[in-house]
Amino acid sequence: MRRALVPVLPVLIVLAVTMLPAASADPVNVMEVGAYEGSIGASESITFQWVLYNNDSFPYLVTVIPIFAEGGDGIAVTPSESFISLDPGEHRTVEVKLSASQGVSTHHADLRVTFNMTRMDDPSQYMVVERSASMDVTALFERGGTKIFVWDNNLPAPLNTAWGTFIIELLGWIMVASLVHLVLFPLVGRIVKRTRIKVDDQLLRILRTPVLVVVVSFGLLDSLDILGIPADVYVSLWQLYEIVVIMVVAWTSYRIFNDIIIDFAGKWAAKTESGIDDVLVPLLHKAGLLIIPIFAAGAALSVVGIDLTLAVASLGVVGLVVGLAAQHSLGNLFSGILLMLDRPFKVGDVVRLDTGEICRVVKIGLRSTQLHNTFDHDIIILPNDMLANRKVENWSRPDNRHSQGTEVRVAYGTDLEKVHKLLLQVAHEHPDVIKEPGQMPYVRTAKLGESGVDFKVWYWVELKNMWRVASDMRTAVDKKLREEGIEIALPQRVITFNGSPSEEQ
Image 1 (cartoon, helix red, strand yellow):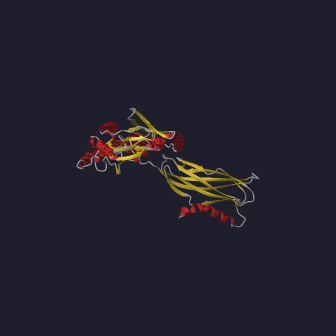
Image 2 (image 1 turned 90 degrees about the vertical axis):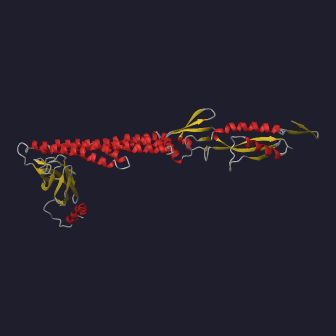
Image 3 (image 1 turned 180 degrees about the vertical axis):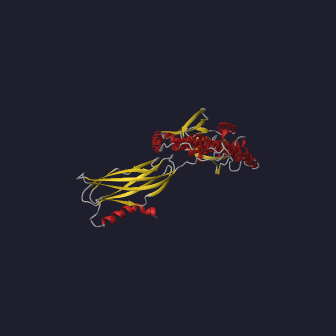
């Protein structure tokens, strides 16, 4: 509640001042806002505010000079404004920000802010007002002493010295790391071996070395604190430790990603009939190889204080430019993913394109699809966006059977029922014609043409036999009709001369 009122306090103070009588001891009033005592830790900051109000009838130039009366080591002072011009009746808020460095030591600091006020129309008229603030600063790393972990070192000399304590504590950390590496992990390993799943065994094997590295490096850093090394050196060592931890985490993440997640995804993809997982799993693997190091590098740079905002913004612009330049390729990529998700066809299916080619699907990639032209015996490569936006007949759906017909024309006057029976007999006699319920051969009188009656016998065959069976059926129909003395009609016209009809073949 108090923090919520802080932004409103300058306005309330100014309103209160404006309601006072015009007479005032100082032409420019310096009013305090909130508390002027605080505490911060290393890498933290605190801000103090004052409100300047010109209750005189002349303009003033105010110079803000913040200095430390005591304990300013490792603290940066930043005023919001160093020079302020105030017209009569005008007020301004001055902020002084104090920022502690990461290597600051624990101490008490007193701040003194001097406001030099000079009347603009008469520089000889000036006044000085001082305000103060104080704060307690807590160091990020500052222990020293001769404690072994949390216990006082009461050992005899020279073991009770700083170097003796350092060696003892470092040996203690090495012992802790050894217990974790040689006792705890093997014990947990025996337990997880009893489980049916293998993921816990892999995870335990991956984590064993990284945990050892982190514990040993932290133990070394914690032990160095005993020697009372300079704060800036210790901060640099701590940053190095953070970078080591980031690299260890990145390496561990990659091992878990590659050895567990990708391995499981690859085995799962091999068991499924879908083709999308066979393509996406390698794509996901490559993305992980790129993303994990990028995040690790960004985290390491942020540890040493490098601002990545500009780099991220630049990457966004570069990504936009690359996206526009690769618009067609990205369209093919998304079309390929949609083809794999929608699955209008799969590898091995026979399809007919809207241009007439009959092909077998060889490969469905993220950018293009490869088709084998069964007639010309060549490979057709089509971009996925083109294939996704055109008519494609899948002859392998709902099964690998195709319905086709053989046409024949007989002369007028022929026994049509006999022709119907003979054609049906030819279809039934062919061994590769399917004769199952729902897919039995049938004959239809297709057309009463100008020179004869058209018949068509329909039948189902396996896709692999369709061209051979079509040829066999034409030959068998011609042979059967000739054996039965049925005339296959040729084109005929009737021409009349002077009223006398004549027939020309």
